[in-house]
Image 1 (tube, rainbow, N blue to C red):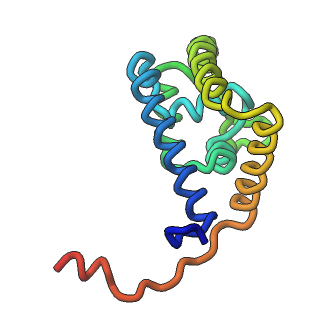
Image 2: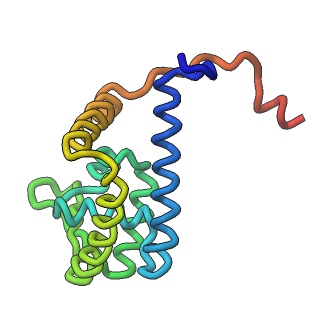
Length: 165
């Protein structure tokens, strides 16, 4: 426990949320507005650029995204001509996602912005610390994907009903 009675794990979770929120806000101001690509669309496009032929479900699983949000992002990326879809020849039920030439071009510009941001942010860490942080977060993410989260305890009372009163 820390001095304020918050566990180190909870404090770390709060810091990860804050980091994610700050990055998301930065993306909106510096990338989404000038490029017209939402953060969800960028996450999907980046996944497709890194692994052409991937599917919506695979992106949702690997990125920890909601399948419906991925589906909406795919629809937006198709509408703007940044990705295209095709049936997987090995499994016609599976739809493969691939970047278009326009998607590769805009992706290169956004990737460069992202690289500069992360290099700047992580410049306060040594190379070994960056490697260690990456390995630790990968272990936690893998465990969450593989094992999920525990069931939460039952609330002490029906808070939703109480707040509606």
